[in-house]
Image (cartoon, rainbow, N blue to C red):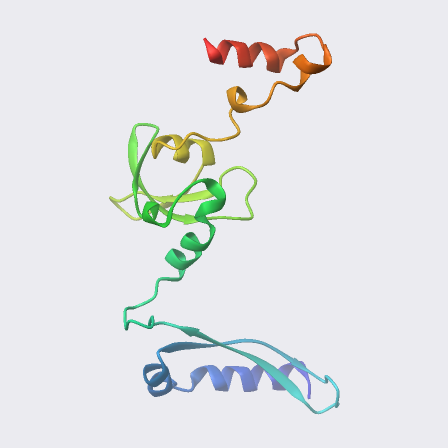
Length: 163
């Protein structure tokens, strides 16, 4: 078994029509990567991914919505915020996803007029939804006051925010 033969087999499998099986079980079948020569020299492994397309109630599943519902609580949101309208920079967008790997712009918003997607700052989305971000300077504890430290820039900003 070699790379060329493995790619030919994978391409042939991808051309096969699995719609009857997909309809019967409510799944979508995709073929992933292929590897060969594992264990025995003439063997090949092909990754088959079968993702559900229908919920237990018979409704179509939305993978983005399921991912949003599973991860929204980490950002102070609730599942009802999926596809909520947010006002960012004077324009209205819909909240349509979360990028959990991003450090700053965790939310994906969509412009309703043309469906174009953008990354949005976590704090901006939270503020637009009326959720107070927990990492604002005024919410940080004042550790320095207990230890007798001189006020630094963060203390001054915290004091200004309180006024």
